[in-house]
Length: 396
Figure 1 (cartoon, rainbow, N blue to C red):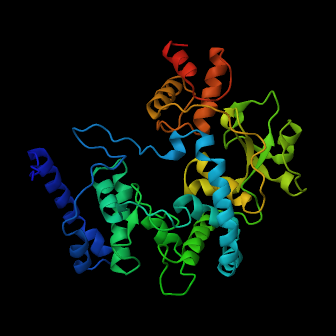
Figure 2: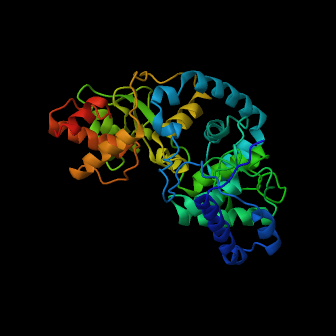
Figure 3: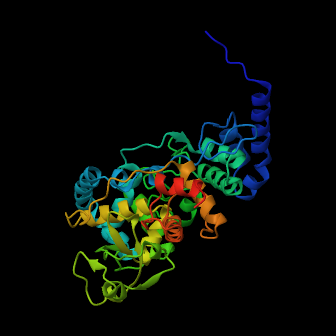
């Protein structure tokens, strides 16, 4: 039987962590946490230094978690077989929970397929259980993460939730980033948007499907959901489409996009074509194109990823319409996060990119990349590839 011996730096780090947690008592007390709860829940609490997104002195960065939304190509993330399976399950659940879903739409204006799609994406309709102890995750991120102030607040709110009996420690499981429950809320989301739809006295997003779905709907409504508006419209882009226009700031009525040659794959009503929309091309000039409404960006506040919104939006559509996207995804490959970071730094040095250097090829990165391709005399496809990275490294 081997004995694990901590090195002096490790012992010192853990002692500093224990001291850090103890120092949070005044904030917890001010938030309404009892001393008994604080002592019980923090006793023996240890950090988890294997979590992503940590910045530990003297240790390599643990990166940003390799979230599937940012490291998979669209075809792998918005996988047809997965969408079809979840859509069939969603249709069944729409009937099973019809009464609460009708109440939810009446209260918040969010259709049943949308909240069901969030539940399906987040936890596979409850089949997936988050792997981490929520309090340990939040404490570690507050102590050693890249967003210490944010997670310090989340940790205090988590203690308050435990103090108030909203959740037991056993059920308080979370992702590496601290999201918990059937619809994956941070504690601050729970406090702001939690809904007790079934009338038990508190919002139970861990066991009560009505509460979890109502809470997801309230979060969308609180963030600006517009009733009666779709999340996006798939369109067939013209041959001469300028992919650098695919940013939220370039917004115009759908009728203007249609006049410019973007053809919707389904017939739109007179009111739909007046809606303002932005162009989204998740694979640059390859794969499907979309005109995104205000509700697209509301869902994006739930998870800041274009692929996440595409998954949720398309899954919600498939619960009532069996048609897949008209244009298939291409067989594009995804560069590693560090390579995309290198691209973003190069684009920033040239004054083409001013957003976060995060290694995630989102709307702003793709548009800036297209502008660079224009200036360098390269094929303009707004997609981060080895060829473009090599051109940048060659000083073009």
